Length: 326
Image 1 (tube, rainbow, N blue to C red):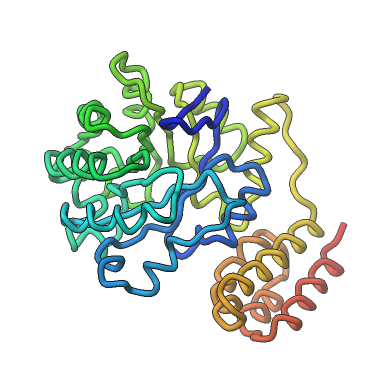
Image 2: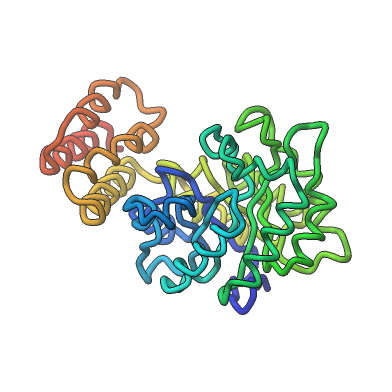
């Protein structure tokens, strides 16, 4: 039984990784409907919160159907992080998650995200301060270290636990790797098998199939598995993994009709949440993933990313169902 504080997630929970410009409420709802056990918001800038920036404030919103949900924050200044915690608390997420793993330049150059892997002492100090300030359980998501010569997570895990976090998610890459090369879960397994560690350890990186999920779960003994890029345009991955865990058999992949219906639902959720113009625009990055591997679909993809009217988009999707249906 996996617990984060008082939150009970059951056996072998599956998590949706926080992904900027991807894991918004419309996408999270689809993942939840397909069996995801816990999700996180896109990462929220604490400096944006403090300045009352509309985009940052909007990221705090979620629907009750998405629970359990963590709001993930990032920043470089401890005082700002504490101030942001007080702004997050009224939204009553199940967890406040600290982002110590984002590798992108615009975050790292501000001394936030994975930049803090270069200063483990500050990571621990910041974590202690946030745990002390928060009435909500705190968790951390991070990476192995800054580069292959500075793998710090094995020693750091105990210190973060001692600082009071209730769960630790680890992406099996260094900051310098970004998303390239293979994720190395060796250190994740070492941490999980450390007898001093008693909080849930969640593994992340390269899980793109039910078989791989079970293989890594068994090999590294993690408490839960977090899925990121493999869920984009593929929210069914959660139900496929659960089915395989429970039966040892592979679930049939989604039909063309189901792909189309899910893409339509995603579009309508997006419009409902963001308004017609923004909902249509921000949905464009998802279509290619929903129809990945379809032959001669280029003209449909082009139509989907150049059409502005929702009713026309729905007709294009229905045409895909007709032309490619089994």
